[in-house]
Image 1 (cartoon, helix red, strand yellow):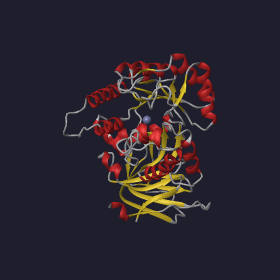
Image 2: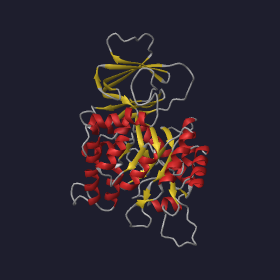
Image 3: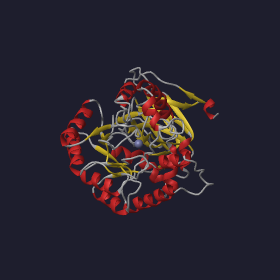
Image 4: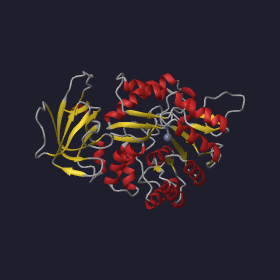
Length: 417
Ligand SMILES: [Zn+2]
C-alpha cells in the first residue's frame, strides 16, 4: 500500500547539465555513518559529500529533502539470477526445460526494474542457467536505456564438468538443454573461456563441485589443471573467475587455482576459510537461498525444528567470520523473489554480523572485490548511484526494506512524493 504514496518517474537523458542537492538525516558513505551531511550531485557523479556547514553550494536548483532517511551508496547485489524466478513458482528444471529464452528475457526485464526500485543499482549476475547469453543482452538493453535496471556484471552460461549438471533424470537418448556449458580437458576449457569472453561474459563462473546424481552429496568436478587453465585464460583477457563450491575439496581446488570469489561454501570449515583469507579470496555465503529452499521443502521458520542444512550453514558462517575472510553480500536472488534482496542482509545479521558490517559488505566491499572503481561509496568523484532508506539501517538492518529514493548514474528512478 505504501507504494501508492510513492511517485515513480523515469527521467530521459537530456544531455543537459543538472545539479541536485540531497538533504537526508544521515549519510552512510560505504564505511561509516555521519549525521548532518549533505550530498551534491552534478550530472552523474558526486560533487560533494560532507557536513552542511561550509559546503560549497552555489547554483543548486534542485533540492531533494529526504527527511527521516539514511542516504547511502546504491546496493551492489553480489549473487543474482535475473533469468530465474522462485522455485516454489516453477521448479528450476521446468524453467530450464519449458521457458524459452524469449520468455525468460521478458521476465528478466521485469525483475531488473523491481531490483532497481528495491535499491539495487548494481548486480553481479551469476549465470543465465540455460538461457545462453540472454543476460548479456539484458545488460545491453539496460545500458542503452531501453529498460530500467541495475548496472549488470554478467557471467553468460556457467561452466561445468561434462556430465555434472542438470536437468537430470533423462535416458541418454533424450536431448536436454542444460543449465550451463560443459567442458572436459585443457583445450576445451581454454576454448570455452575464450568463446564466452568473446560473447560478452564479464567474468567466468565455474562449478568446482556439484552432485553427479540427483540426491547425492556434491563431489569435486574439475581437475586442478582444468581449473588453473580456465583462470589463466580469463586473466590473460583481463577477466576473473568465480567458483560455485560447497565441499571442502572443491573450495580448496578453486582457491589454489586462483578464483576470486567462492559462492555458497556450505560445507566449508575453518581450514578452507583460512586458506581463502591467505589467498585473498572472498566468500559469498548465499544464506537466503538456503533458507528459501528449506522453506519450499516445508520448513516453517520459527515453528518447525530447524533443518540440518540451516544448523550447518550457521556453524559454517561462524567459522567464516572467525577466519576473517572477506564476506560478500549476495543472496542468490532468483531462487527467491526479485526485489527481496534485503533477506540476505537480515540473515547476515541473524547469523552473526553487525548491521554496519553488512552494509559495508553490500557497498564498498562488493565494489572493491568486483573491481568496480567509482562505485560503492558516497564520496566526491564517485558515480551517483545513491539510495535513501527510511530510518537507520546501521541500528536496524530491516530499515533497508523501506527504500524511498533511488538514483542511478545521476538519474532519479524513485522518489518520495
Ligand atoms: Zn546462484
